[in-house]
Amino acid sequence: MTDPATLEVQFLADIAAAPDVAALEVVRVAALGKQGTISLLLKSLGGMSPDERRTEGPKLNALRDTVQTALTARRAALEAAELDERLAAEKLDLSLPAPHRRKGYVHPTLQVMDEMISIFAELGFAVAEGPDIEDDFHNFTALNFPPKHPAREMHDTFFFSPDEAGERKLLRTHTSPVQVRAMRSQTPPIRLVSPGRTYRCDSDQTHTPMFHQVEGLVIDKGVHMGHLKWTLETFIARFFETDQVTTRFRPHHFPFTEPSAEMDVRCDRSGGEVRIGQGTDWLEILGCGMVHPNVLRNCGIDPDAYQGFAFGMGVDRLGMLKYGMPDLRDMFASDVRWLAHYGFPAVAVPNPASGLS
Ligand code: PHE
Image 1: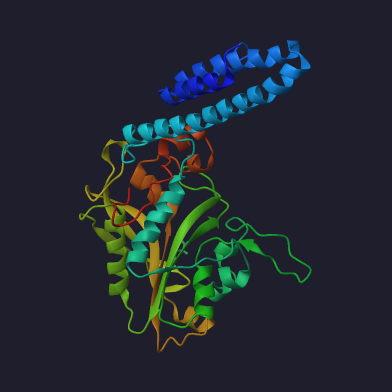
Image 2: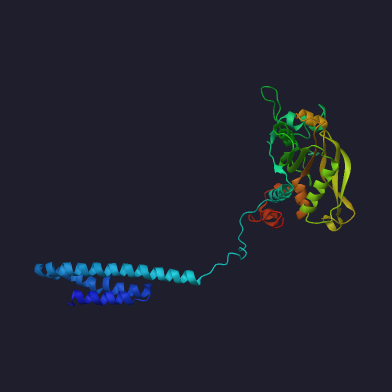
């Protein structure tokens, strides 16, 4: 039998000399594998006399433990060295574009809302929100709607059944009630935009029962139509990313503004597409006006001291125009093919510095 001390010297030398994990495994199998030298010697203990076993047993067990410990240590060292080598050799270029494996998309409406908010934020507007379920006071009365105004009628407004007190809640028909909530809870100067869902009983190519608006409100001393016009023209130019925006303000009527106007932008409709900033057609974009003195009074603001302007625009509609979507109803049909086509990657967060779209 080979002397355990000699074997130990030999195996420890082999272990130290193993250049990689695979070579080390060969040494392990030769020593401690099923048919390995040390394993076979341990097996041979069974055939020895008790005296022999008493002297050889501890030596062989010690040999096995020493070799096992050396193997484990050498393996750890080799693995660490291999990892260091890979880390030094492999490189990952994080600036490369991600492969086309996007599974989710940002809905165009949300993207457009973020674009709008980022433009208005840069102009110094804060963001305010209000509830989708409103009461008659905030949606109509405080906004100076006369009691029999047609917009209160069933065909426009989704009303809930009256509660025990006889009060009929409703789904807000516009974001203007947020104006009322803001004016009643803040002191001027106020400068805010309010994005959100709005509801009207209507459905065709350019109307859906649920749609989105962004409301704007500015209340301060000495505010006039010139401020309104500049703000909206600046917004439209940035939103459509062109310097060539021409706008037209047409007189209109809203109960809560006086004077009131609708703003159109010049566009070209030839060729089935709408192009902003060229052509001879006009497209209605939004409603606006100077806040009516009655509304200021209803909200506890003195109309002799403060003036304000307000505007409201359809988010989905502006998105259709900017990104060329032909039918508003598709926006809310949850068709994944449509979403994959018109949706935005989640990392494309709009901000004025990196570009909006
Ligand atoms: N609330 C109006 C609408 O939904 C839009 C609007 C807002 C008009 C603010 C004037 C001022 O049609």
